[in-house]
Length: 284
Image (tube, rainbow, N blue to C red; front, top):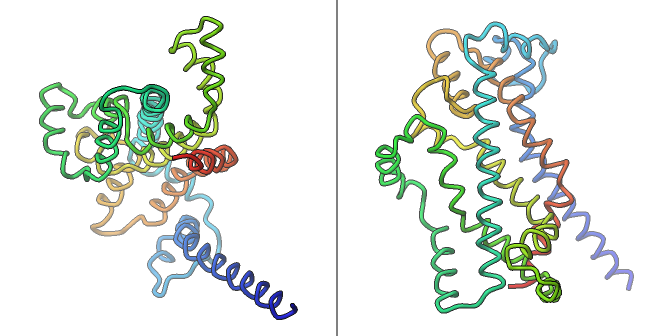
């Protein structure tokens, strides 16, 4: 009996040690960026690099606003706008489509659902050329519409998460609302949507992080520096300081600042995020 308990406790200890080691591996790059943001220029060039600065240079976070000749505020506002629209578009379109697949039966329903799921395996690089041609004819190139139009037509992975969650909601609620004279649209907006809070939180966080850090799509469609999102802005900063003296400490400071919104949103909605991912996985 004691040997079984000992093996069980040893297994737990090894698991925790592995998880701690894994956490350190994931946290170290971000810790290095924070350390670089508080260093002088010369400290960022030291080999081997050190994690902590000798004297924290908090003024770096002031200098990026005053000494860097870049529209940093504009880039952040652009990112806030495009990310917000993308998240709204994904939540509205995917939840509505998922409601249809979860609650209604029709000819070809399973086929179309499978077809939509198959789109997850199509790389974005495979469709970028026809998308660019279409957007060019519509006048969306170098326009925020190139970033925010597509999410309003749904996304397979987010639609799947919503559908799985809706399947866990008893149909009794729908039937009771129908008896009271509610239509399907009203059932969706007033019955289903309030119960979708965990799923909405999970999808919102995933979509926000993906849109906030998206580099490829803005790089393809945006041309004017004043319209850049922050991910393109970071690459722009890096490219403008490569020759001659690098401003790696300022670049790290900007990176830290732009990472804060994602962290705040995740930790503030962590409970709903985990609930949305676990509850929706119960029923297939």
